[in-house]
Amino acid sequence: MFSFEEKMTNSPCSGYRDQHPQTILYNILSWRDNNYLNNKLISNSLAHNCHCEQRRRVCLKDPKATCQDASSVLVKTICFMRSLPSFSQLPLGDQSSLLQHCWVPLFVLGLAQDRIVFEVTDVPYSSILRQILLRPGLSESQADQPTLTGVHRLRTCLHQLWNLDLSPKEYAYLKGAMLFNPVVQGLSAMLFIEGLQQEAQRALQEVIHLLHPEDAGRFRHILLAASAIQNVSHGLVTELFFKPLIGNTNMVHLLTEMLFV
Image 1 (cartoon, rainbow, N blue to C red):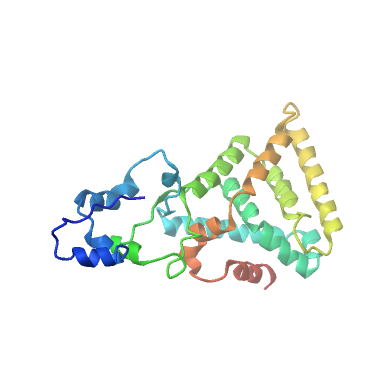
Image 2 (spheres, rainbow, N blue to C red):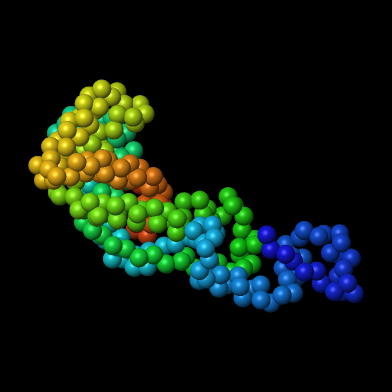
Protein backbone atom coordinates (compact mmCIF):
# COMPACT_ATOMS: atom_id res chain seq x y z
CA MET A 1 0.00 0.00 0.00
CA PHE A 2 1.06 3.59 -0.51
CA SER A 3 2.21 5.55 2.54
CA PHE A 4 0.59 8.91 3.09
CA GLU A 5 2.44 11.77 4.77
CA GLU A 6 0.31 13.87 7.08
CA LYS A 7 0.00 17.62 6.63
CA MET A 8 1.70 20.06 9.05
CA THR A 9 0.38 19.87 12.58
CA ASN A 10 -0.44 23.58 12.66
CA SER A 11 -2.78 23.28 9.65
CA PRO A 12 -6.16 24.91 10.37
CA CYS A 13 -7.86 21.68 9.16
CA SER A 14 -6.11 19.40 11.64
CA GLY A 15 -9.21 19.05 13.78
CA TYR A 16 -11.25 17.91 10.79
CA ARG A 17 -8.61 15.36 9.91
CA ASP A 18 -8.70 13.91 13.40
CA GLN A 19 -12.43 13.42 13.12
CA HIS A 20 -12.46 12.07 9.54
CA PRO A 21 -9.12 10.34 8.98
CA GLN A 22 -10.36 8.09 6.16
CA THR A 23 -12.31 10.49 3.95
CA ILE A 24 -11.45 10.56 0.25
CA LEU A 25 -10.95 14.32 0.25
CA TYR A 26 -8.58 14.05 3.21
CA ASN A 27 -6.49 11.43 1.43
CA ILE A 28 -6.30 13.55 -1.70
CA LEU A 29 -5.23 16.65 0.22
CA SER A 30 -2.74 14.70 2.30
CA TRP A 31 -0.48 13.77 -0.60
CA ARG A 32 2.39 16.18 -0.02
CA ASP A 33 4.84 14.31 -2.16
CA ASN A 34 4.30 15.49 -5.73
CA ASN A 35 6.50 12.66 -6.94
CA TYR A 36 3.66 10.31 -6.02
CA LEU A 37 1.41 11.84 -8.68
CA ASN A 38 4.12 11.67 -11.31
CA ASN A 39 4.95 8.07 -10.45
CA LYS A 40 1.28 7.15 -10.57
CA LEU A 41 0.92 8.54 -14.07
CA ILE A 42 4.02 6.93 -15.55
CA SER A 43 4.11 3.66 -13.61
CA ASN A 44 2.26 1.86 -16.39
CA SER A 45 5.15 2.44 -18.79
CA LEU A 46 7.90 1.31 -16.41
CA ALA A 47 9.19 -2.25 -16.58
CA HIS A 48 9.07 -4.01 -13.22
CA ASN A 49 9.75 -7.68 -12.59
CA CYS A 50 6.80 -7.99 -10.23
CA HIS A 51 3.37 -9.52 -10.08
CA CYS A 52 1.70 -6.15 -10.63
CA GLU A 53 3.43 -5.78 -13.98
CA GLN A 54 1.84 -8.99 -15.21
CA ARG A 55 -1.61 -7.76 -14.13
CA ARG A 56 -1.36 -4.66 -16.32
CA ARG A 57 -4.47 -4.20 -18.42
CA VAL A 58 -3.80 -4.16 -22.16
CA CYS A 59 -5.65 -3.71 -25.44
CA LEU A 60 -4.88 -4.24 -29.11
CA LYS A 61 -2.35 -1.84 -30.58
CA ASP A 62 -4.06 -1.98 -34.00
CA PRO A 63 -7.66 -3.00 -33.22
CA LYS A 64 -9.03 -2.33 -36.71
CA ALA A 65 -6.69 -4.70 -38.55
CA THR A 66 -6.44 -7.32 -35.78
CA CYS A 67 -10.20 -7.49 -35.16
CA GLN A 68 -10.72 -7.94 -38.89
CA ASP A 69 -8.29 -10.87 -38.89
CA ALA A 70 -9.94 -12.31 -35.78
CA SER A 71 -13.39 -12.04 -37.35
CA SER A 72 -12.16 -13.95 -40.39
CA VAL A 73 -10.79 -16.70 -38.14
CA LEU A 74 -14.08 -16.85 -36.23
CA VAL A 75 -16.11 -17.24 -39.43
CA LYS A 76 -13.80 -20.07 -40.54
CA THR A 77 -14.24 -21.69 -37.11
CA ILE A 78 -18.03 -21.66 -37.36
CA CYS A 79 -17.88 -22.90 -40.95
CA PHE A 80 -15.68 -25.78 -39.83
CA MET A 81 -18.25 -26.81 -37.25
CA ARG A 82 -21.13 -26.54 -39.69
CA SER A 83 -19.24 -28.58 -42.30
CA LEU A 84 -19.05 -31.68 -40.07
CA PRO A 85 -22.04 -33.99 -40.68
CA SER A 86 -21.38 -35.74 -37.37
CA PHE A 87 -21.73 -32.41 -35.57
CA SER A 88 -24.90 -31.39 -37.44
CA GLN A 89 -26.50 -34.73 -36.51
CA LEU A 90 -26.14 -34.06 -32.79
CA PRO A 91 -29.13 -32.81 -30.78
CA LEU A 92 -29.37 -29.02 -30.91
CA GLY A 93 -28.76 -28.79 -27.18
CA ASP A 94 -25.50 -30.70 -27.52
CA GLN A 95 -24.45 -28.54 -30.45
CA SER A 96 -25.07 -25.42 -28.37
CA SER A 97 -23.17 -26.82 -25.39
CA LEU A 98 -20.16 -27.82 -27.49
CA LEU A 99 -20.19 -24.45 -29.23
CA GLN A 100 -20.23 -22.53 -25.96
CA HIS A 101 -17.49 -24.66 -24.40
CA CYS A 102 -15.20 -25.22 -27.39
CA TRP A 103 -15.31 -22.10 -29.55
CA VAL A 104 -12.30 -20.47 -27.85
CA PRO A 105 -9.94 -23.48 -28.27
CA LEU A 106 -11.02 -23.81 -31.91
CA PHE A 107 -10.54 -20.07 -32.41
CA VAL A 108 -7.02 -20.22 -30.95
CA LEU A 109 -6.20 -23.10 -33.30
CA GLY A 110 -7.48 -20.92 -36.13
CA LEU A 111 -5.23 -18.05 -35.03
CA ALA A 112 -2.28 -20.43 -35.06
CA GLN A 113 -3.17 -21.98 -38.41
CA ASP A 114 -3.53 -18.56 -40.07
CA ARG A 115 -0.44 -17.34 -38.20
CA ILE A 116 -2.18 -14.23 -36.88
CA VAL A 117 0.31 -11.93 -35.16
CA PHE A 118 -0.96 -9.12 -32.92
CA GLU A 119 0.51 -6.47 -30.68
CA VAL A 120 -0.91 -5.03 -27.47
CA THR A 121 -0.44 -1.79 -25.63
CA ASP A 122 -1.32 -0.52 -22.18
CA VAL A 123 -4.87 0.59 -21.53
CA PRO A 124 -4.74 4.35 -20.81
CA TYR A 125 -5.18 5.05 -17.13
CA SER A 126 -8.11 7.09 -15.93
CA SER A 127 -7.39 10.21 -13.95
CA ILE A 128 -6.08 9.78 -10.42
CA LEU A 129 -9.26 11.18 -8.91
CA ARG A 130 -11.43 8.88 -11.03
CA GLN A 131 -9.49 5.82 -9.91
CA ILE A 132 -9.98 6.87 -6.29
CA LEU A 133 -13.70 7.53 -6.60
CA LEU A 134 -14.55 4.42 -8.61
CA ARG A 135 -14.87 1.18 -6.70
CA PRO A 136 -15.15 -2.38 -8.10
CA GLY A 137 -18.73 -3.22 -8.97
CA LEU A 138 -19.95 0.36 -8.94
CA SER A 139 -19.04 1.38 -12.46
CA GLU A 140 -16.40 0.07 -14.84
CA SER A 141 -15.86 -3.64 -14.26
CA GLN A 142 -12.24 -4.62 -14.79
CA ALA A 143 -12.66 -8.33 -14.12
CA ASP A 144 -12.71 -9.38 -17.78
CA GLN A 145 -10.29 -6.82 -19.19
CA PRO A 146 -7.27 -8.45 -20.85
CA THR A 147 -4.10 -8.52 -18.80
CA LEU A 148 -0.49 -8.92 -19.79
CA THR A 149 -0.51 -12.35 -18.14
CA GLY A 150 -3.49 -13.51 -20.20
CA VAL A 151 -1.97 -12.27 -23.44
CA HIS A 152 1.33 -13.96 -22.58
CA ARG A 153 -0.52 -17.24 -21.98
CA LEU A 154 -2.25 -16.96 -25.36
CA ARG A 155 0.99 -16.14 -27.17
CA THR A 156 2.72 -19.09 -25.52
CA CYS A 157 0.03 -21.40 -26.91
CA LEU A 158 0.42 -19.92 -30.38
CA HIS A 159 4.19 -20.28 -30.35
CA GLN A 160 3.91 -23.91 -29.20
CA LEU A 161 1.66 -24.66 -32.17
CA TRP A 162 3.87 -22.72 -34.58
CA ASN A 163 6.92 -24.64 -33.39
CA LEU A 164 5.11 -27.90 -34.17
CA ASP A 165 4.37 -26.62 -37.69
CA LEU A 166 1.13 -28.60 -38.06
CA SER A 167 -0.15 -29.55 -41.48
CA PRO A 168 -3.72 -28.64 -42.54
CA LYS A 169 -4.85 -32.22 -41.89
CA GLU A 170 -3.29 -32.21 -38.42
CA TYR A 171 -5.11 -28.97 -37.62
CA ALA A 172 -8.39 -30.39 -38.92
CA TYR A 173 -8.26 -33.58 -36.85
CA LEU A 174 -7.02 -31.72 -33.78
CA LYS A 175 -9.97 -29.33 -34.08
CA GLY A 176 -12.29 -32.34 -34.30
CA ALA A 177 -10.74 -33.88 -31.20
CA MET A 178 -11.20 -30.61 -29.28
CA LEU A 179 -14.73 -29.97 -30.55
CA PHE A 180 -16.11 -33.37 -29.62
CA ASN A 181 -15.39 -33.04 -25.92
CA PRO A 182 -17.38 -35.58 -23.86
CA VAL A 183 -16.58 -33.88 -20.53
CA VAL A 184 -18.83 -30.89 -21.35
CA GLN A 185 -21.64 -30.84 -18.82
CA GLY A 186 -25.21 -31.70 -19.82
CA LEU A 187 -24.58 -33.62 -23.04
CA SER A 188 -27.37 -36.00 -23.96
CA ALA A 189 -25.23 -37.89 -26.52
CA MET A 190 -22.08 -38.08 -24.43
CA LEU A 191 -21.07 -41.60 -25.47
CA PHE A 192 -21.53 -40.80 -29.15
CA ILE A 193 -19.48 -37.61 -28.76
CA GLU A 194 -16.77 -39.54 -26.92
CA GLY A 195 -16.62 -41.96 -29.85
CA LEU A 196 -16.26 -39.03 -32.26
CA GLN A 197 -13.38 -37.65 -30.23
CA GLN A 198 -11.60 -41.00 -30.22
CA GLU A 199 -12.13 -41.28 -33.95
CA ALA A 200 -10.59 -37.82 -34.50
CA GLN A 201 -7.62 -38.70 -32.29
CA ARG A 202 -7.01 -41.94 -34.21
CA ALA A 203 -7.15 -40.04 -37.50
CA LEU A 204 -4.67 -37.52 -36.09
CA GLN A 205 -2.31 -40.33 -35.09
CA GLU A 206 -2.51 -41.85 -38.55
CA VAL A 207 -1.70 -38.55 -40.24
CA ILE A 208 1.22 -37.98 -37.87
CA HIS A 209 2.58 -41.46 -38.58
CA LEU A 210 2.26 -40.80 -42.31
CA LEU A 211 3.85 -37.33 -42.30
CA HIS A 212 6.32 -37.74 -39.45
CA PRO A 213 7.14 -41.45 -39.07
CA GLU A 214 10.42 -40.65 -37.31
CA ASP A 215 8.84 -38.40 -34.66
CA ALA A 216 7.52 -40.78 -32.00
CA GLY A 217 6.66 -38.00 -29.55
CA ARG A 218 4.80 -35.70 -31.92
CA PHE A 219 1.31 -36.88 -30.99
CA ARG A 220 2.05 -36.31 -27.30
CA HIS A 221 3.46 -32.85 -27.97
CA ILE A 222 0.39 -31.90 -29.98
CA LEU A 223 -1.92 -33.04 -27.18
CA LEU A 224 0.13 -31.04 -24.66
CA ALA A 225 -0.21 -27.94 -26.81
CA ALA A 226 -3.95 -28.57 -27.12
CA SER A 227 -4.22 -28.95 -23.36
CA ALA A 228 -2.54 -25.58 -22.82
CA ILE A 229 -5.14 -23.92 -25.04
CA GLN A 230 -7.81 -24.86 -22.51
CA ASN A 231 -6.24 -22.34 -20.11
CA VAL A 232 -6.99 -19.41 -22.44
CA SER A 233 -10.05 -17.73 -20.98
CA HIS A 234 -13.19 -16.94 -22.93
CA GLY A 235 -13.22 -13.47 -21.38
CA LEU A 236 -9.75 -12.67 -22.67
CA VAL A 237 -10.55 -13.67 -26.26
CA THR A 238 -13.91 -11.88 -26.26
CA GLU A 239 -12.64 -8.65 -24.72
CA LEU A 240 -9.39 -8.50 -26.68
CA PHE A 241 -10.53 -9.47 -30.19
CA PHE A 242 -14.28 -8.85 -30.37
CA LYS A 243 -15.36 -6.26 -27.81
CA PRO A 244 -14.10 -3.41 -30.05
CA LEU A 245 -16.52 -4.68 -32.75
CA ILE A 246 -19.56 -6.00 -30.89
CA GLY A 247 -19.58 -3.77 -27.82
CA ASN A 248 -21.84 -5.24 -25.14
CA THR A 249 -23.43 -7.84 -27.42
CA ASN A 250 -23.46 -11.27 -25.82
CA MET A 251 -20.77 -13.32 -27.56
CA VAL A 252 -22.51 -16.67 -27.06
CA HIS A 253 -25.74 -15.32 -28.56
CA LEU A 254 -23.79 -14.04 -31.55
CA LEU A 255 -22.06 -17.38 -32.05
CA THR A 256 -25.37 -19.22 -31.77
CA GLU A 257 -26.85 -17.06 -34.50
CA MET A 258 -23.82 -17.67 -36.70
CA LEU A 259 -24.10 -21.42 -36.24
CA PHE A 260 -27.85 -21.97 -36.54
CA VAL A 261 -29.23 -19.10 -38.61
